[in-house]
Length: 339
Image 1 (cartoon, rainbow, N blue to C red):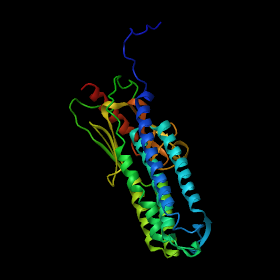
Image 2 (image 1 turned 120 degrees about the vertical axis):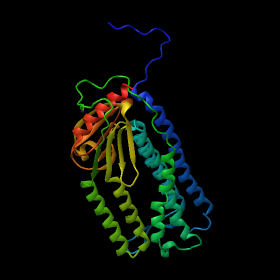
Image 3 (image 1 turned 180 degrees about the vertical axis):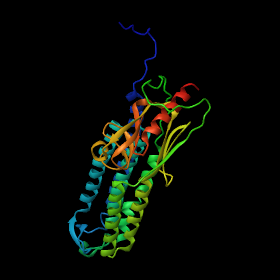
Image 4 (image 1 turned 135 degrees about the vertical axis):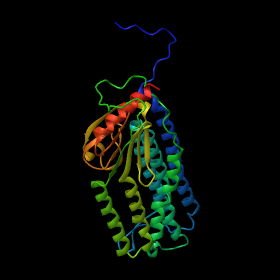
């Protein structure tokens, strides 16, 4: 029989109640920012209405000639509606899977990127058509396409940086007795260090870089080569990580310096070994968030270190000798609880 707590006793918040309010705030302002960017582009189109042809070019063939046309107001409306849909998808991810700050940051950045991307597409497409009576001869430059893809990354990155990190949430319960532990002497200092790199995802990324570079060469749009260059930098950052376990806890950081994360030892509930199937468990490779909110650095299938932490969060990284990392991390978590 359980006894109800005395009236006025503060109720312990559940894991969901800890992060839900943060997710709602981040998704609200980032969705609003993305929508305002798209509406801003629509307002620009409105001010240009007397300078644009009745039917503007909206699609170009492989040869660079326009082969699709629509009214200026229609393309502005498409931009706004598409932004609403994309923001809705990213906001849903943040609201349902945003237990970790890294997921909320990606979702907020995605919302802002959606609006900035559609604004860049709309404005970049219509700007060269101002003053034309017939839009059939207008050309869309590779520089415009590259700018439309890359420039929105700037406000998206700023939005992601504005999302607050997770507050400190030290564990109150001891590490489970059946969790594996490394045998450490009092005061002994031990560091476990491995490098996790490569995998199927890197091969997929290499194909994407080669294809986009080939398209830039074939279409003679040399400015578009900046796109595969940026893709290459992203894939290098996402598929080479240093994994470290020491007295401070777990640190996983890209060899490029970003992205990265740290799980303090006093927030480790339990560390263990798990088996990962990238597509089924995380929907792909790289820095991933699963449907249930689990965050992971997933570079390959097979053995991985699973760290369950306070606040209903968890972090997984595919790395060799995951058993050794788990045992040491549990031992360090024990030490952290002893102060």
